[in-house]
Amino acid sequence: MGKKLYRTTLSDRRIAGVCGGFAKYFELGDPTWIRLVWALLLLAGGMSLWVYAICWLVMPEEPVSAGAPEEQ
Image (cartoon, rainbow, N blue to C red):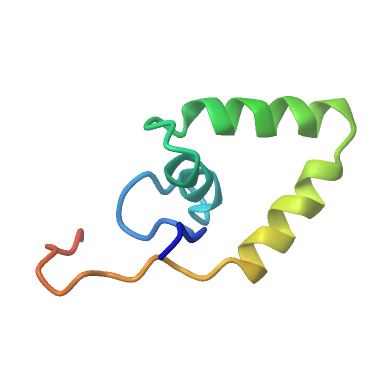
């Protein structure tokens, strides 16, 4: 089975978990680099805001495993 792109739910989530999901998918570890690139693209032209919104709507949330503790 291949990798799947999910929005993060519990960890690495700031707004919607999109950047955390991309960081996990590309195995970057820390999503800060993805957030930085996204912010630079937003300042460069604004198109990344629409792409982020579409990813937020289209990407499913990461499934929560049964044994994982929930954050409150």
